[in-house]
Length: 291
Length: 330
Image 1 (cartoon, rainbow over the protein chains, first blue to last red):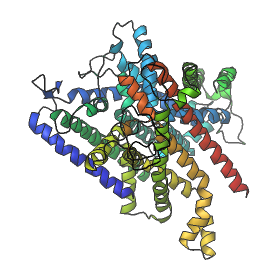
Image 2: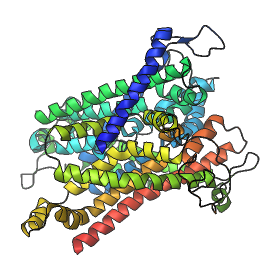
Image 3: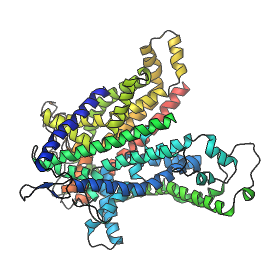
Image 4: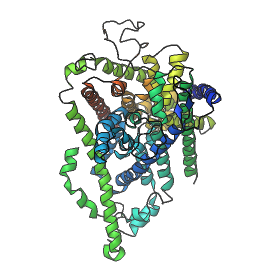
C-alpha cells in the first residue's frame, strides 16, 4: 500500500521535470538572478536564483535562532526539569507543534511584523517580514525544529528527538560526571551536546530535520516574507522563497506556459533538495546505529 | 497553564537542588572541594537558562491562547459559526467549518484503515529485509516532502489527469498521502509496544497468527492506536498547503444540507465538489480579503482552529489514559 503511494509520488517529479526541461530549453536561465515571468512585458526571464537563495537564507537564519532554543529545551526536559515541570512543558510543546501554519502566519503578520517595524523604526512595513518570518517559525520557540514536529513520524519530532537522544545517553559520560559529583549541570557543561560525541549525531539529525521543515514551509512564510524576488541582502529586507512563490503563482498561471513551467521547476528543486537532505539524514542515522 | 507558571515564581529557586541521577548510597559529595567557584556559577547560569527555555514555551503558548481568546471575543458566537460568509457584514464560517469536518472524516476514512493495516504489517509481518528498508525509506521520504509539493502532486494527478477539477475527494487523498507515514508509524509503535509474551502465550495456546493479532495484539494496542488517530486528525484539520491546489480555494456557495444527492456537486455531502476548509479560508482571507471585517473573521477562525487543536490534543491524551487504565485493570 505504502508502495503504491511511493510510486505515485515518484511519478510527480517526472511530470515536473518534463515541464522544467521545457523551461530550461526555452530560457536557459535557471540560475539567473532576474525573475520577470510576465510575457506581457518582455524580455521574460526565469531566473530561480532569488528563490533558491531566499530559501537557503531564511532557513539558515531560522536555524540559527531555533537550534539553541531547541537544544536548550531538550536539555531542560531531559536533564533539568523535575517530573512536575516536565508534565506541564511536554504537553504544551505538543500543542505548540499542532498549531497550524496559517495561524503562525497570521500571528506573524498581525503581531510580529508591526512590532518589528516599530522597533527598528522602519518606514517600510514590508522591509521587515523576513525577521517576522524568522520569529514566526523559529523565535516562537523552535517553530522550525518543532515545525510540524508531528509532521514527521512521531519519533522525528526534533525536540522530542533531542530529548530522547539525551535520555538515551548511557551511564557513560553523564553518569560519570554525576559521580564526580559536580553539582547539577556541570555534566552538561563538560559534555555540551553539540561537541559530545555521544549526542552530537542525534542533535545534528534533529537540526537537519528542522531544516527540511523550514525549507518546506509554505504558507506561514508566504504570509510574512514580503515576496520580493530579489537576492537577499539584509535581514530586514523582504525576500521570497521557492515555496511561497509556488503558493502565490500556481493558481494564477496557465498550464503549459513558461511561467508555470518555471514553478514546476521550483517544486522539482525543492523536492530534489529535500530528498537529498533526507537521504543524508537516513545515512546519518544508519551510521549512528552502526557505531 | 500560564497561571501556574506565574504562581510558581519559585522555579529558579530549585536550581541548587542535587542532580537527579546521582547514584544512591554514595557519600554525599562536598560541593566546595570538588567544584570551583566559577564552575558553580556557570552551572547555576546554565540551569537558569534551561529553566528559562521551558518557561518561554509556556509563556508563548499561553500568550497565543490569551491573544486569540481576546481577539475572538465578540466575534465567535453561534451566528458566526452557523452563518454563511458575507462580503458586506461580519460573515460566518459555516461552509468552511463544514468542509473542514467533512474533509477530516473523508481523509480519516481512507487513512485510518490503510495506516493501521500498514502498521500491522510493519510490526507483525515485516522481516529485516530489503522490502522493509525500502518501505522505511519511503516513509521517511514522503514525510520530508514539503506539504506544498504534495499539494502540487494532487494537482497533477487528481485535478488534471483525472479531470476531477478541485474536489474534496482529491484533497482527502492528497492529505492521506501526506499523513500515511505518520499514521503507519504511530500504529506500528502502538503495536510494537504490546509485550512479546502476549503473542507467545496466544500462539502457544494454538491460535493462528491472525487470531493472535485480531484478539490479543490489537485490543492491547487500542490506546496507542487511538492516540495516533487523534494526533493525525489534528494535523489533517489544520493542514492548508496540501489543499490549496487540490480541494480549491474559492469562496463556498450557500450549502443546502437537505440535498443528499452524493453525485450532485451542489450537495454539501458530495465528495466531488470543491471544498475550501477553515485553514485554507484563513489563508485566502489574508491574501485576498479586503473586507473591513477581515481581521475579525480571521481572528475568530484562528481561535476556532486552535480550540480544535487543543481539543484533539487533550482528547488524545485523555482517551489514551482512560483506555490504558481500563484495559490494564481488566
